[in-house]
Length: 134
Image (cartoon, rainbow, N blue to C red; front, side):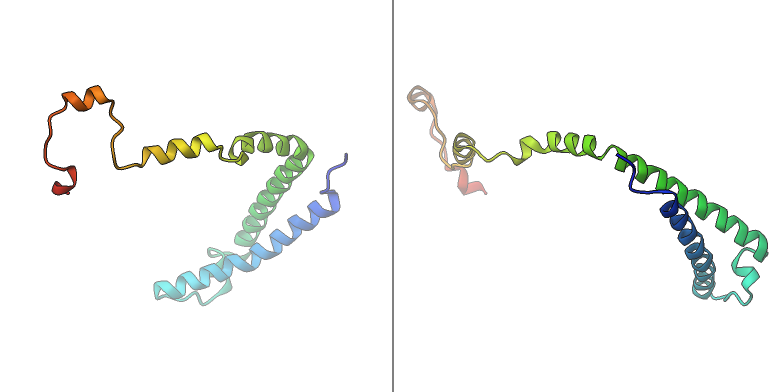
């Protein structure tokens, strides 16, 4: 089976990431300067002092991150049947219904009276009720 993400989708994803990051980075700098009390007045300051250098680094980083995301997505899509099988196998015991014996055991755990044998009751000393010190 061929991967769903072809070259056209990969290039489109990288271009969209580059365009988005070139708009978001200066906006973050403007908001950061505004919150700091010294607003950024020039576009060059929003990119770290140089528009060309800041924009180039921003675009390269955005392209590398988008390419890494596309590679991981392509890998996940190519192994999706195996991944679904693994997840289904891991979740199988959790989806099983609660059996009656487990429910019965839980109910006995939370009872307030003790289930002592008659021999233990005969040998035990009687004291004040446990609830009087709570």
